[in-house]
Length: 271
Ligand code: DGL
Image 1 (cartoon, rainbow, N blue to C red):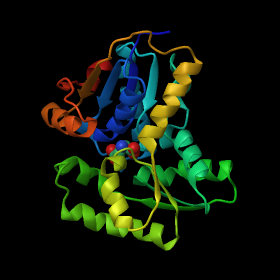
Image 2 (cartoon, helix red, strand yellow; image 1 turned 90 degrees about the vertical axis):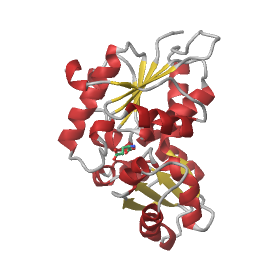
Image 3 (tube, rainbow, N blue to C red; image 1 turned 180 degrees about the horizontal axis):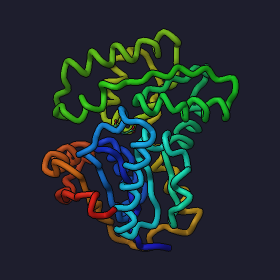
Image 4 (cartoon, rainbow, N blue to C red; image 1 turned 60 degrees about the vertical axis):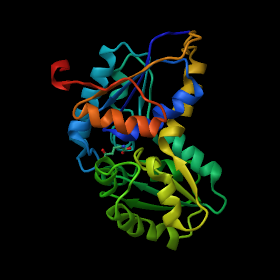
């Protein structure tokens, strides 16, 4: 049993998909969430930059004495692939493995689509994991560079025309290749899953990478004896590197309750 918090990070709102699943599964756990909103989007960055950002994010969370780190970001998970995590003194989970496993279990026809950021698709991490798990699978991987900036800039209850047009473009190959399962490989995308289903126009199983990583985290905490003994609901402390007010109001929408105000942090002072 361990009363320390679970650390979660992403470039921004996407990480809340993991937070909301953790809240449902283990409401008594405390969560420390970092959204690096000042440097969002991560998806257009090169691997070296992403490693540096991930180091900053890990370092910040470790100052909060977390017992476990969930990388709620497909872009970072796919570009560091366990390299840096070996140096940390707490267990770390990314989204690639749990999400790929869920997709393989879900697909009936073996045609699996992935939509994710440019950096995530370029890394090939999801594609490799899927074919390792099931060599006969057919993978359609589509980079979607416009989605994160649009999700972050549009009011959540009123998505823009631009988002609809982008989805039409990105989902075309998924439809053409008859994918019955679609990995939402960027954690921002489950925030618009209704819109994605609507634009697909036929029944496709959507795999939420944030939720899958959160489920896996809970199973790991259980296995390692790290669950909290508390019987009270745990707090979620939100930290961001820019625009805390805006983040708090979007977080209320996506989490379905009003969290404590997000706190602005400067990651440079933790270097
Ligand atoms: N939500 C993140 C991901 O899962 C980051 C997206 C971005 O900042 O481009 O890839």
